[in-house]
Amino acid sequence: MVRSGRRRVTLYDYGFFSFDSKADFLHRSEEFWNPDKTRFWQDAGVDLVIDRREGYLFWDMAGRRLIDLHLNGGTYNLGHRNPELIAVLEQAMGRFDIGNHHFPALARTALAEALVETCTPNMRRVIYGAGGGEATDIAIKTARHTRQRRKIVSIRKGYHGHTGLAVAAGDDRFSTLFLSDRPDEFVQVPFNDLAAMEEALRGGDVAGVVIETIPATYGFPLPEPGYLQAVKGLCERYGALYIADEVQTGLMRTGEMWGIAKAGIEPDIMIVGKGITGGMYPIACTVVSEECSAWLKEDGFGHISTGGGAELGCIVALKVLEICGRPEVRSMVHYIAERFRAGLMAIQETYPDWLVGIRQDGVVMGLEFDHPQGAKLVMRRLYENGVWAIFSTLDPRVLQFKPGILLSPDLVDEILDRAAVAIGQALADVATAPREAVSA
Ligand SMILES: Cc1ncc(COP(=O)(O)O)c(C=O)c1O
Image (cartoon, rainbow, N blue to C red):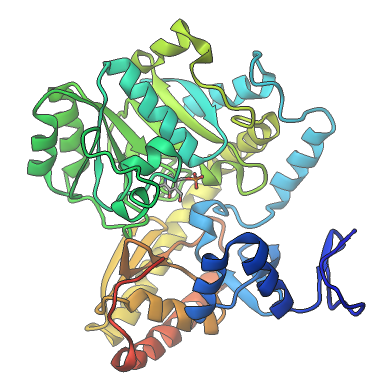
């Protein structure tokens, strides 16, 4: 056992490590992990250190119970430590490990086949990464190889991860820090702006358009009717590939397995991450069409990742797909979505000038408040009221409201009750709240 505290009396003994107090832990977090991130949350009034976790609940290390409406971006779509996923992982560990990425692998192939079956009919193969950023990098590399063009178009305030190509395709907020903003190769256009998209594609030199079906970090603005379909049409006209980032809209969160298929679009490439392994053993997937498989036939060693598609993760992912595909889960998502829609609209009736927008597609939801920092105020009050939901980094007016797909009706009602209180309290905070830009 590694002892982190210097004194003998240890109040927080986790078996694997221990801390004298929450303050002692936070001090060490700043010291040895990430000073800015640790301090940011303390300054935002969220002194959360996640300890025990179960289903859609977790407990702060000081013991406070919170309902998770953040789900780490959908990672815990099926709840924290889902018992079926734990059972499958424990069983898998009796025979498998991460495997050897150089060889044909049993679990990777089994998952690839199962995943392809859930996608639009044009999808053929799966390339694996360890996280969504890597899966985005794979998607961009694949598009470039397929089209033999360098340029990538993405959405302003889109988010695809922090790896090399993914961060370059994302918003300036993250690309400039590490000098990854490359306007010659990565062009960004506003969401829902077809004229700008056509302008970017018109030159016929774009390899692919990478786009979240509903941009999460931007606060889930919904695509205008026909927008995504028109983008797909423009891609076809100008020879660019359509890369659908389904990291936050896949796995039944819109009430269908994949948000992009619900929109009636066959993407050329699709990115899957987070929830695909329920937070138990991370992997991410890039699903590609036959045309986009060319490099896999020409040079299969073109992308190498030791932990990418770890076989233990693949086995968990098979179970996730099976759970998401159950008819009763599908009807539950629709039921939960409807219950939230009605409940949130009732709250909006009480505060029509404060809660000015409810964005919703299934359980993908963003709540828009009438203040530049509105979602941060609500986030803080929700936290005090036992609910954890996070503001949208690239639009802090909007609260990301992300319930899991297996929520019980009782918990839905509890969330709505607590949200009604917190939203009212946050409105009273507006008068004294700073309006400056957010730094997260
Ligand atoms: C839409 C989207 N794509 C990609 C990613 C990157 O995933 P990861 O953090 O696993 O690299 C994220 C992460 O938040 C995301 O929300």
